[in-house]
Length: 355
Picture 1: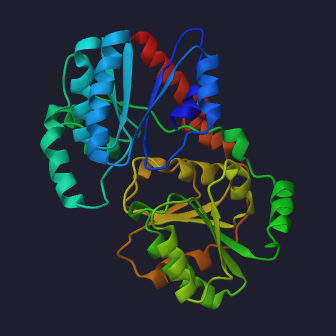
Picture 2: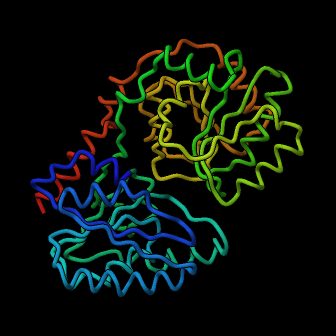
């Protein structure tokens, strides 16, 4: 998301440095550093196998960097209050304005209940004269910021924007890629997201399994990678679906893959404002997603929300009943609802310059 905004910055007005956290054996694509340096900025990468050690290293690195450069603005992209406060304390003495930008609405993983408790303890400390609060949705704001600030709406909403025209439905591209993937005659249910608890792939595969029993000419296309990928592959094999599910992996060509899909299913437990749902809508796909996701992600009439407490059979039936529809260009609706990257990047730049 941050990189998408950066592509549309006026680099004559704003000089940007990046600090990126990398875990274990993660590697940055060298194209990022090359472009940042071309625009006069720097890319700083913090590596660590242990997240606790990384947090400590990041604290001292951020403080040292802020003290050395005295940035006009430091923009912190975070998903919990503890991380936000840790970063803020590190840089608050050396920066005029600090943006705390909330991108999520819950937390998961190991010791999730403890993490939520720590998050709630630190949320009241997300305040200060030099802090500006930003969120991708009101749900993300409610999760991150103090209750009083939410009540008074003392935050700015900047929606996660996309390159709308890049995702517009293209029948020719669809046909060419479906032929390449050898799924020309299939009804394709798609999903884009990391294989982590939050995205709820386990439920998605169960829904597809029920749908597939009545529609054996269907396929499930899963795009992404993550820690639960192998577990989900085992589940698919145990259900006998190995020939009906494609684990596509990570790709920079996701816009084209939306074209080959016929339906998009997104049963996440929580989200801030999922960019993939905006992309899927821009592609003209009909979408079924969990109602635990903020309603603010609805950019056009293609989205239907349903509770995760509803049965797997109910989810499968809704897909079956809604499978026949006309795929159309909804790009104007996406732009009118301010989900276009030009609009959100303009808001970011205006925020920086006004500060």
